[in-house]
Structures are given as structure tokens and as C-alpha cells.
Image (cartoon, rainbow, N blue to C red; front, side):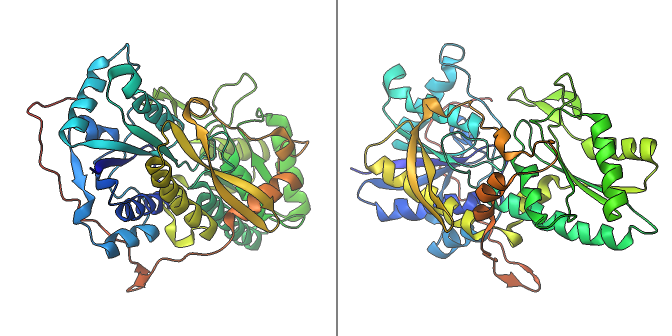
Length: 419
């Protein structure tokens, strides 16, 4: 008899995570002899713990197809980390209780590194607690920091947004620099890995084009060298455009924008780097400045998504189901680069114990010798990931995104579970 599946989204959402959801659900519907209903967890793994499930079979084929061009998390996401089996067995007992009640035999978790850890733990339920379940991790992260896979779905679209934005801002600043703003700073996401900041470098195809400076988490901040480069750029080109990663560290390795608080995963909360740098430029060089923080805009920008990214996001969702029905568990779907020019990729897999809690940082060979820009090798890696346009349909001049009905599944367990 077919068994039901659980799908959920975790961590920060992206412009294309719903494309992965569409890939999972549409593919599962084709395997009706092995997979019954796909239940989505409302707000990630929390939906499983609290038995707050969504019946995706109540959604029309057209609505599920529309997920492919709709940003954010259609079922709600979360930042919630399962503790170890020995530290909170009650969580796993609760998961098994809910899974048994709804005959769930497949688990698809769509997220980044911490989500890979959750998926790994679920894949171990059979050996640890006697409830066999096939768990497949569907990769997603704008930070592009998952290991083994060539790239992470969600990153290509953020990369395209950042490159487009700094190019357009560069034109603006250049046109006003003679009598007004001379320095523009754009702060982007990236806690430990500078992939998003690096993507801004794609906009500078010729000498002097924006951005003239990129600040990476991998390169410790040198105030004197930074100010000298800003001054040099203004004198040479009339202005200076900067892309700065929020995870920029000082000489001692401390986050320059750390706010002093931490999220549920224990990560330091970051923010405010751009105004900090802008004030430094003002105090030391007396240049007029503007700054911006792309924040949620960069990861929600489905209107300028990379077609490559959309296709890969859908493909990893589809492949997750195919791996599960083939008997696989405890693996993450990966993207394998077969060639860069022209870009050719395929789907692979990686053991979750080699993925969970591992961050892939920028190789030093991708950062220029002076630490302020990207190399040709980095450009060769990044460029294919932003290729192609996949515009959503528009209505009344605005993108027409879908909102699902998200019909709840009737509860079958008797007790409440607090998270």
C-alpha cells in the first residue's frame, strides 16, 4: 500500500523554494502507486511536532504549478533545531507518534545546513527508535554554503538580483558624483561565506565599473587599506560603489555588525554594517555617501529570478521524490557541474552525514590578491548561475503570485505538544 509523505520548508525562504515544493508535489502525484498524500508541515518541522499538517491534495494542479513562479515559503518556514536523541527523546517520540497516526513513510525537508542536520536525524529514526522512514534533504540556501553540491537553489536568483542592483546603483551614483554622492554601500547577506557579495562583482565587466570594492567575510577588514581604496576609486573614477557582506570581520575575527543577540541556532544576529562603513568614510574622507541594505528584498525578488536557478530548484524537488521511491534515505540531492561554458549540469546525491553542519566558504582563489574583488575563476563559476530570465505572469502591472488554500489535516493524536 502507498504511504504518505511529509514535506516542509525550513530556514530563510528564497525566490525559488516554492519551485522545489512544486517539484516534490507534482512528482509525488505521478508515483501514486507508492506515495499517497503529500502532507506539508505548517512552519517546517514545527508542523510535524504540533500535528499542524496541510493536505496538498486539496490544491489543484494549476495552483501547484503556480508555485514555480511564487517566492517565499508557501507553507510557512521556521528556524527550529532538533536536539540530539539523547538530549530530547520526547521530540522524536512525538514525531513518530504523528508519523504513525498519518502513515507517513517519506520525509522531504527543504532547507540549508541546519535543515540537513534535522533531515539526518529523521533518517536515523529507524535505527534509533524503530520507526523506518525515508528522509531526503532538498537543498536550499541563498548563502550557497552547502558542501558537495555545485551550487544551492536560491543562490542564483539572489546573485542575479545583487549584480543587477549594484550595476543600476552604480549608474545612478556615477551620474550624481560630481556634485553629490560619491560613495554608495550595499550590504548583502552572508554570515561566514561571501558568495552573495562576490556575485555583485559580476556587474563589473570593465575597469572602473561598479562595484569597485567587495568586502568578504573570508578577508579580515583592514581599515587603512579600505579607505585608501575608496579614495583611489573616487579620484580615478569619480565615485566608489561597494558591496559589503554582513559577515565582515575585524582583525580579531569578530563580526563588525554583531548586534549582541543570537538566533535559535546559536548564530549571532547581524546587521548595520553599511551605515557603520558609511560613517567611517564620512569621518575619515569627508565624502558624501548613501547606503542600502538589500535584506529580504534580495531573497524575495522572484521578478528577476535566474532561469537556471528556477530550473535547478524544481529539479532537486523532483529528484528527491525519485530517490525516495528508489529506496534511498539519508541523502541530499546535489547539483553536479559537468561543464562551465556552456554550462551543463546534472543531478547527484550526497550522504547527509557529510553535509549537515558543514559550511562551504569562498575559495581564496576566487578572491583577488588584494582582497577587494573577484577573480576570473570566480566569474567563471558564478556567471552560469545567473543566466536566463523566468519572469512570473503579471496582472495589473504586478507579479501574479499564488496563495494556496492550505487546508488543514484533521488531527489524529489526542495530546498537544508544545515547542
